[in-house]
Length: 304
Image (cartoon, rainbow, N blue to C red; front, side, top):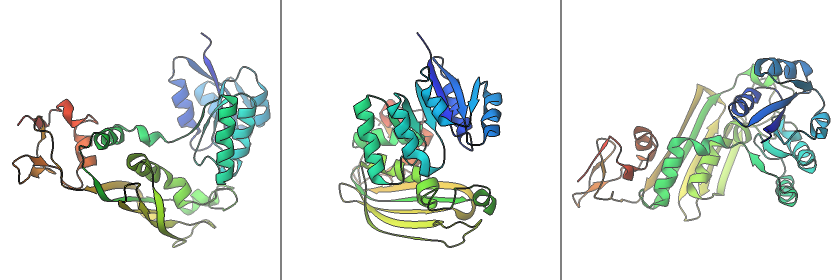
């Protein structure tokens, strides 16, 4: 079978991740590296053995041998490039956000359905073992009914991060900063686990702008799940901490099946003599069990 021929359009900060991922697939090859700065495309090509480079994405999309493309350029170009790629019959993997305008995003979704091509936004943390385990536990009712939750991301982006980019920190090129860029993944995982979220209220600010940034560096919001639970969401790129992300949830009191008892903190005996879930235990226990369901009897569990 012919291997999947892939192209990477945009060879900046995240492009090596796309190159590593597609290079690891036994039935795929990277055919093109494309960037507005040809030297960056050439650098990526040298590091990953990509045979062709160009600064013009039209050349990539006109290549009939190309089956799929990664789009990893400034946010403002996402919608136009994804539209051109789908119209050219290519599958599209696009860095977040899908588009800066919700109407453009909806149009891309409709176009992908009409052309029969895959359109996917990078949301890799949905597939982290701890996230998939917690989502399975929620679906199985093991964590009880969600009452409330907290999602927080603290990270630091210095002045050079914005000053050395023609688009970061600008409304026209990035469309926002703390939320649409760094905070995207924390919000996506929260939505993935909760089955959707609506906004009750939010505020954003430029508390410590750097590098000429126009956009927000901090945002806080109150969100509601479809079942009515409230989540607080906070993200900042003005922190002295390089990266710290945490998610905690508070369910109603619930009990584990009698067959399995995860041992030690953060668990404790309930009034029924069985073991009940501590309100913030989900992520902690998932990491302990290597992402396995508690009913699979990890080495940290004993029968009761």
